[in-house]
Length: 218
Image (cartoon, rainbow, N blue to C red; front, top):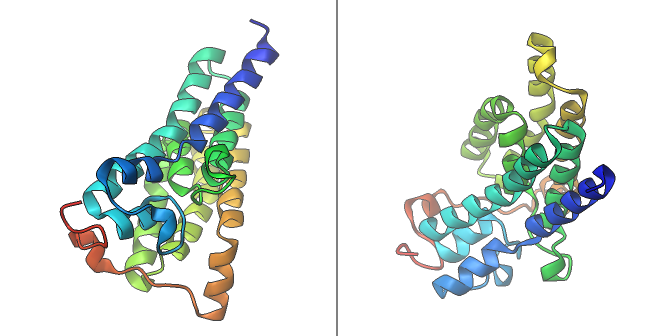
């Protein structure tokens, strides 16, 4: 197959993968409420936790991670490790996650899918950003703020890794470490507005104990 055609096909597959509405599918399987009907109306892990409880939300998060990681892995193996192809697929998957063709171009905010792409591209950067994400949520109880600052931490983390071992961080990866968080910030535009005006909803830490609208058993 022509190399250009292969890359176009990989990007299309990545978008379709990102578009898979895991939160909606899990809600239908579990018999719980559609996450689009409560809370933020988004289909990602946080709203799934509100709608379905901890167990099913874990399934949703795992699915969101996978729909970002698998397209990047496929691009890596199909192209022999072309970083540009990997980043193009990562971009398409995150766009699909927040602009799903199966949900009328709605969906989540791309956080789980974006993390999935980075787990393949550079897992150390994810490990370094994770304390920022978790710490901000625990201190402020704003998941949106944790997602914003956690994603923003990716680029300086990648710069640090590039400085330590530049040969292990292709330039395309640095571009994605900046572009990926930018996509996530764009998807959080409404949250940012509410944070600025002090009207953003706070996360109920009790949900982590299994308490959710869908019930603890869910």
